[in-house]
Length: 397
Image 1 (cartoon, rainbow, N blue to C red):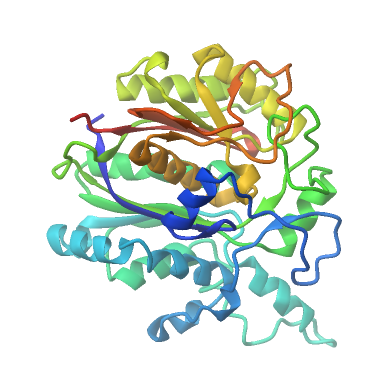
Image 2: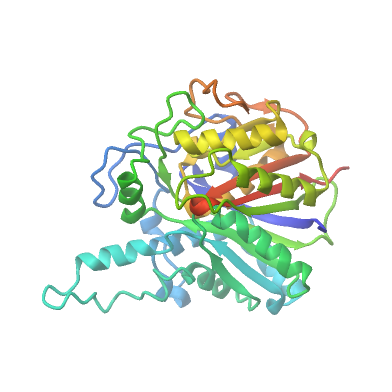
């Protein structure tokens, strides 16, 4: 594949709004997970909440899209110069040559949850104020973003659970390779809602404490929310130090509706495919951003897959201890972390983990490492065995 220039990127999560607080959280091993009251949740758990989302005002001409998910999206679009970069790209290539491909699993489902409380007591009808198309509908966030920027290229949402916003990088690459577009806004947005919190609790996958990925005593996930975006372009602007998307690997386990393949076979295939497309061997990868959900079975399967491809030497960590499991936004969040790691020559440590499980044969990093970085790999693995791995690279001087 011809590498694609990652012209701009940004992220909002429980550790902060924008790249600067995110990098600060990495450097100081700061977690945004906390036990707090949210909505009507009555569970013994912590969450990764983005602060002050209720105060975000959707742009007036897009008021129909007002919901927690799109407020989260807008809060990320306006930071780190991302909005200016997209508008410049649209001016360069033309609005019809810029696509929008985003991942989500919840979309604006909270709007429907709240509406359900106010349904008509006699008929059960939902209130007329609920605008399903512009809020709860899965396409809502992509429709919001394309209208926000006034771009008219292909646009769609991928919803493959936790691999959703990793797979959109592949969607953009194929569209660009086919000549249909020249640039794409990619990423993922998932906001807190009752369905995921109570749903994962019913599966007995929620921890009562901040999650501990790859820890000997890990006992489940912590749900978080995030919006992460990147702007991919044909590599006409790549200069030394630029970050590029160089490899993509996708696979499907077809093993079980929710459990990963116990040997991580699909994950192994995804990582191998990403390396092959990037034209690099396992020894070239300086850091792996693990999916690392903190459940016993997922971490064990991913460890086996990583060990099969890389052995036990490549530094790796999971960012779930920082911001929680952001579900449909997790893949894009990992990609942004990899881009930050490459830009600032840092291998970020996982937080929350106290004692790495000796049964997991990987080099899980508990302290940051400063080192020259060239290639990083991002993993995102979802329910149903949907797997995606990305290789991001820094252009050599």
